[in-house]
Length: 218
Ligand SMILES: Nc1nc2c(ncn2[C@@H]2O[C@H](COP(=O)(O)OP(=O)(O)OP(=O)(O)O)[C@@H](O)[C@H]2O)c(=O)[nH]1
Ligand SMILES: [Mg+2]
Image 1 (cartoon, rainbow, N blue to C red):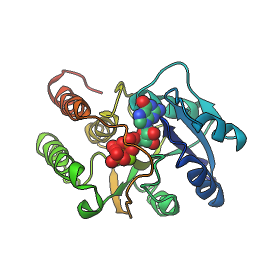
Image 2 (image 1 turned 90 degrees about the vertical axis):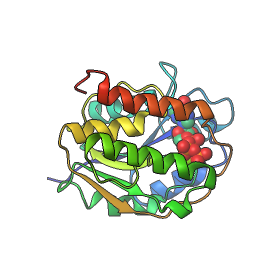
Image 3 (image 1 turned 45 degrees about the horizontal axis):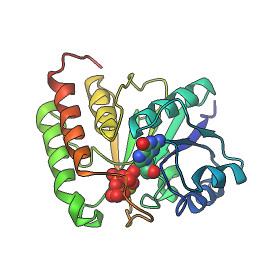
Image 4 (image 1 turned 90 degrees about the horizontal axis):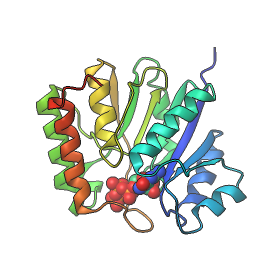
């Protein structure tokens, strides 16, 4: 039976990138939808002009976006969900490559070269990855990647609200002994403004600690 795959773009004010992302993803033949945090720019208008479904209003924060994406994919009967940040940093052309690793793996993650990551983000990324590996006994290279594909049914329930959601997906997958494959990808400088603030680093750190010591089985 052919697996059904859908792509989700989480957005918050990504008018500079959305059209290019839609064109590239459609060019590859994938269905897609947007989960939006209430963008004040042209993001939603661009999605609508392209007849891309937009989900918003009942929440915001990237964690909400990811949880919404999983719910939508499940409800619409898709087997696989592709999450890819909508800032022209991750390459949609690599989606088919990542998908080749399902079903042998439960999740395939686009792994960035550390030198491709902007300098200000390198140390936090290295730190969070090393910290997760230390706490959970894994040997991963990029726990915070914003590009991943996974089997919708197997993904454990999530409750992250913000940017700690990537680490939570990784950790809960590890706890459930899901098989994770990291696949090297290109990573570029983002278009438009970053949505990450310094406080998000602490939210991610707190999120990782809660997974380890919060008494939640995920
Ligand atoms: N649904 C939703 N998406 C969001 C929210 N905040 C950011 N995003 C999207 O999540 C993706 C990642 O955000 P970025 O600002 O690129 O974060 P980052 O990749 O860690 O940081 P950069 O290095 O600056 O790119 C982008 O597509 C954003 O538009 C939010 O509150 N809700
Ligand atoms: Mg980004």
